[in-house]
Amino acid sequence: MGTEDRPDPLGSVLQGIDHVEFWVGNARQAAHWYVWGMGFTPRATITSRPDRVSHVLTQGDIRLVVTGATHADSPVAAHVARHGDGVRTIGFLVDDVDIALTRAVEGGATVVHEPAPASDDRGYGRVAAVAAFGSVVHAFVEHREIVDEVPDAVRATIPPPGPDLPPVGLVAIDHVVGNVEADTLGEWVEHHRAVLGVHPLAEFGADVSTARSALRSVVLRDDSGRVTLPVNEPAEGTHQSQIQEFLDANDGPGIQHLAVRTDDIVATVAALTARGVALLELEPGYHEQAQERVGDVGTSWDELAAHGILVDRDVEGVLLQVFTEPMQDRPTLFVEVIQRRGATGFGAGNFAALFAAVEREQARRGNL
Ligand code: FE2
Image (tube, rainbow, N blue to C red; front, side, top):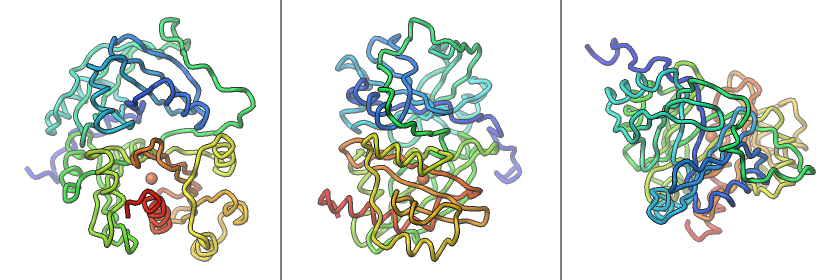
């Protein structure tokens, strides 16, 4: 039986993205950044494992777990020494961890954590994890008993931010993007299809390039439409690809960006700017060209230009986006903020403008 007529190994097992976990050098300070800069609320502090502390932060339906080592022997410390601060885990919500893990292993996944009971600020559940690209892991998370009140044992030890900060208004994770090594994209697409049951939805070829940078990208999505995982690999360009720069800085594959949705990107950008979050600056003339390309989008072009917001249109509607500078000194993980007005794409019309902005940053770092 060929793969065409074999039932999908995972089908609709994935229920969404439960959380994203960062492994960082100083979890307390990184958590402050996500709270004060990005508008998250401290929800819990978990100290049940002696080698690490995890701060749980939430905003809308987004749940971030910021974890740091408390001891030199912790795998968290080794991970950070190699990769710098970044994403360790994408946690997928499932109904049954055993079923998800069994199917992932049948698809060729390597187990990182066997299913184990877990309790945190949400109650009681079970978690397992399998290896993804680089040092990233895909976790399966099952909730068996959900509590509303945060238990005393895990009460947040990060203070909430001051009352005068404008709300950022992030509502959900839109997509999570990985970078893998040159000529491995096809393998990773197959791996994810077999292990997570996600399918290629769109492909961007080497035409996605400027004179200096190029990449190939495949967008993977599950049947429910709740999990979207684009994966990039570097392609030949005249100068160093931004994907190759990431691979060098991260010492291997990893998560390049986290895209989070807002319902009002102008308010979100104003809030982020007021909170001191630096966004990538666009080329002069971007908005004149974009207006010609895209037409009326329901927000004044003066306002979009004033906030440095990128605009694109696909057959279904309009999307508005901004990109932060990297979240750490290594040019690795950054955050995208996206507002969708019908559009389901990824702003391919903005790739050239985005690359140009990234290349200016690369040039500033002397890496172009
Ligand atoms: Fe994106």
